[in-house]
Image 1 (cartoon, helix red, strand yellow):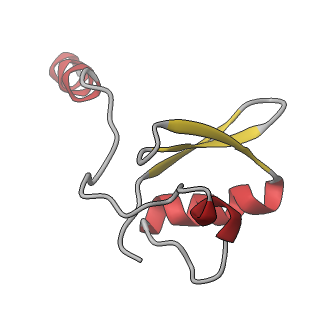
Image 2 (cartoon, one colour):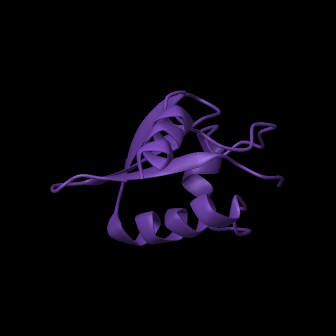
Length: 83
């Protein structure tokens, strides 16, 4: 399996991940969340792990390299100018 692009999200009550391939937010348990945090960093899904997500069409290979809000870089640059 190639590289995948996800974003892990945690609220006070629950843990989720955003899957770019299906444009979906999926609720996960604590164990899955910890594995997905590693996937988020490495962009690689360990063999045999998270099988239920792969069977559902999630965690597909992507050509996109990262998810970022369009204004993030602009705000960072503006902050640097003021410092």
